[in-house]
Length: 434
Image 1 (tube, one colour):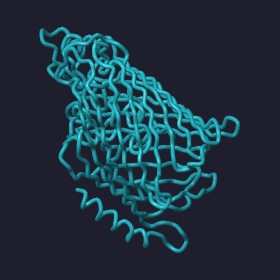
Image 2 (cartoon, rainbow, N blue to C red):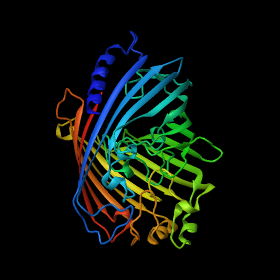
Image 3 (cartoon, one colour):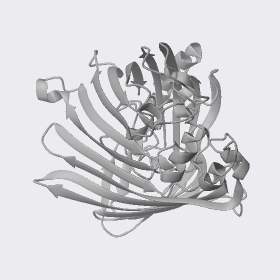
Image 4 (spheres, rainbow, N blue to C red):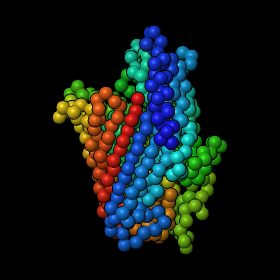
């Protein structure tokens, strides 16, 4: 896999020489990223454990991902984007035992062995509205050229719903920002995805000045956190909608986004499961069950070098978690500081904390010994799960697109269980992109 990553990087350098036309409008482009994450956890207090507990023993794990970003213009306003990926490795204890799991890259792993798969493959069609055009830079899944300021855009194919919904400038990307799952997206948003984080979807957005309106329908997996997507939309379907407003405070940009979702699938029910002699959520599954929820997402630049973010989310918590992670209520907030403040313009410091909670039925199910796909200590002494994360990112060579990060996470009540922990998690991250 390392050899392939090197070959792809070399091909990218060659390919990049012929990706623009004379008018600087890109017809095709090519980008590449690879991210390696090493994690270490010392032993912690663990008087008991279950099937899905974060192990109380000392542990070391790592993950590796490599992605090709291929883009091409088709007809007017249309482009196609294709992203093959190779991923491998594992989160700590197989990425179970914490609602706010510690490595946001490992939701793409599925199989610890290095695996090649197609992450994204989608068509994007943009219809210009009145309001003029602006220059758009070359980037991953974005072709350089002029794009309308106001537009209707439709995406159809395979991609991650997080590409469109719940975006945040300061807390969105575990490859370059905070590592924890609960910072890359709203933890209570059980967004439609297979085990690697992707789904088939048709989504649309309307951009009108500072306002944006987004909606999308997407396929859900056939089983909770499964690898196979159910394309029979009469059996399973996810609906998502978002309204967002950009603004300025003291000439500093900010935004607020309101998100809503509703999933319908072959879900189990917590109330039915806790009435069983041996609670098993999978034994209560029925088609037609739903999960719905809401979220708010805020970001604000507060100085030349500093930005704030916050998210809050809630879902009804009656039926089983189906896609993302076992968090029914979530609150997170943090701050990012650009290293230019101390004359290191390519460095970055991030500090954030997140609180996660469970619905009454969900916590009772776990207390009686039930297992979800993320949680299951055999029982729990319930408490809010809290993770505080600090990272520092450095670019050691100005001329090369290479970044190193050191990361520390302090976890109180892992898996919502105050009988276990606290836990310290140390991580090192290596990231390359061009």
